[in-house]
Length: 273
Image (cartoon, rainbow, N blue to C red):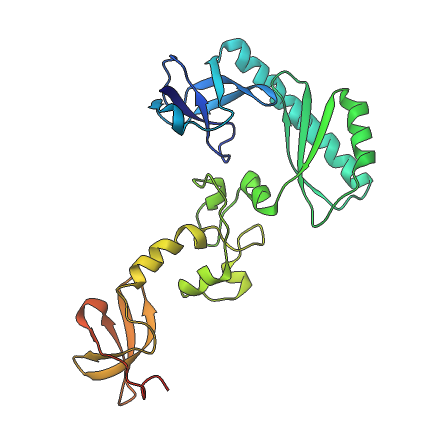
């Protein structure tokens, strides 16, 4: 068994597992951890819990210690340098008319490398830009192209629902989203209605999808013949969240019915034509 804690490096980022050893840690503690890029500051986001050896993730790194005042001062200095680097890189991107959108800049804790994250519609020849950055900052430079969904996660914003976009809030992973998910949730297929700030299908379509499928199991399908208090009719619309359906009666009248109050009838061959 090893004591494992979940660590995040950015609010909108993924949660990574680290070996906490015997450190006494609690949520929101700031810690120094060992990563593939060297030391980094992270935040504890889960309680420490023992995990059997056979269930441990591969290449498990360790938590070195809680941060000190000196560590926090270094982070503050790095954040100032990141702002300077962002502004300089952005000016060079514009001067060189490069088809890319700068999203984020990150200094490694020991200042051995600066990473510039950007989005672009296609591959970008940024060799001259790298030369500008190396000449200015005299350290290793990495330009990393990320997806537009990850870019929206970093920038954040308000979605059409009036709330903070899910990718910048509580989602730790950006799952695949398909048009089928929108259809199953009876969403309008108008791109403006189902697209997020990134221009891609909204993340909420994915994490609500399974719930819709479960709820729809108890709801008669469109086209199904059912009996109501006013006679037999055909289901023409579903409102899964409210547990209601709209039924068109044989006399042409439409009525809303609670799902729990209806009885589905077997469809005859004639009904399906």
